[in-house]
Image (tube, rainbow over all chains, first blue to last red; front, side):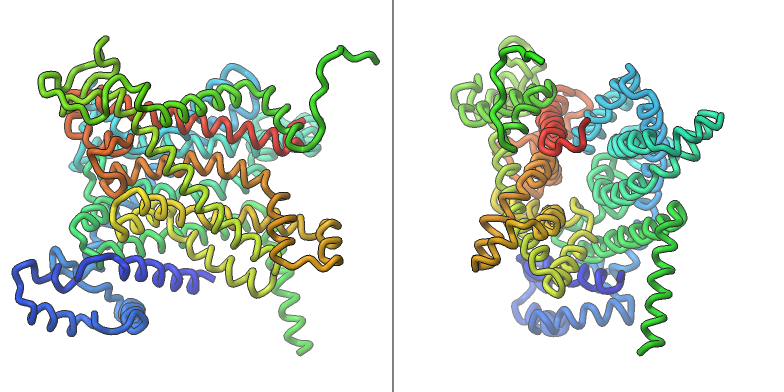
Length: 312
Length: 289
């Protein structure tokens, strides 16, 4: 299922870059280059072929040679350039997801177990505010407060662990709001179920009831949201990286867009989409571990499939 | 039991929903805020204390004062006026990208849900592909490919939103399709286009409205993010995102330039989110109680 989707992603990204105005050959050689040289380079880059032949060579090179072309700006292979910067973005996304899961799920559980209490009301309003804040603006405000006025943390760059605090907290806390809302509503649904009452009636400790009976059953929608947040974080990292001047893939993509360095943009978006797809796949696998019913559904389907094969 | 003589609410789905929405204080407050914002956008010429492009080089970087309630920017332009004018762009982009996304997403979803099988498979797989690219990233690369400008900003945001609507509409079409009135319409020989446009779409409006309200919040956020990156509305047109983008250079000294446009975005999105939640509760009474 993943391979056709990825192929589709490649086609979409390629088409977007195909319609981008500007002549790549002209970009490589510069404004002053003679027309004959540009025409020659166009020929050797295969730019004169039709849309489909160009797409075909692009996919063929990507799949068999792992070749995404060369960056116009640095003249280096795109694949090396983006893989060099990818770990930074991945680290930022992982840190933020961890923060948002820890904060979001904890707050969601507390809010749900104490529904309509002061804590719940404050937490839900803060969460709603958090959902409404543009991430990049939250980042700018964090810079104003913590870097400019309080002088606790550095404002931008990436030279040590303290440079990671502001960006990952901004990204993490802003997406913890969504996770908190989801955890809360999902927990509220589960807490009213009969088996929770049964667990309490048999004298189980409240903490065990919440953590094992309720949370485990409320996790499915929460995990879905976490997976989707990861994708949003990869997109949001583009903004946060340029706010905090972190040399990751996101900032690289934006810089390349400004320089019209199409192969880099193409490759970068592809890599981020690929990691998003892998993340979604992991979420699907995780479903099976959280909810054994889903796993058994798959095995039933498999058995059925085998039976029909035998019959045929 | 005797009831108090109160004007009984009119019957009907939409009247019921309106009645429920009216009881939700937060949602009503948000509705008022949004109406105020719309009025601001329409009558910006009369409300704004200064023209948005009036430069005053004797009063640059002024902090908030009586004369300039929210201060002035690097060209001495009044920030409050620019925020008021900026609401125009945000609302236009929000509304029109949602409408474009609903039209395309809704049609695709309705066709896919109504015909099922191969058509459904083809359309939904295409939507899966679009969903596989994080929305913000898709909007960024589309906005980079098209020339910057209002129209292209709307297109970039709308395309990234289409799959969401297609899914919502498809899901509700699948349940509506089994209803008896659809069967009745088929029996009297109504053409497919009539059934989809006249019977199915009006009946799945409720989830679309909820999705649209929340989606408009997302669209305004994306628009400001794209303008912040320099891919959307170009200066000197006042837009909240591009105001933030130009304020960024002065972040160390002039906090007011960064703070207020962001607060404007936040209030708008907050109101839309609260209204969306309220609408969901009002339109889907099963969720409450």
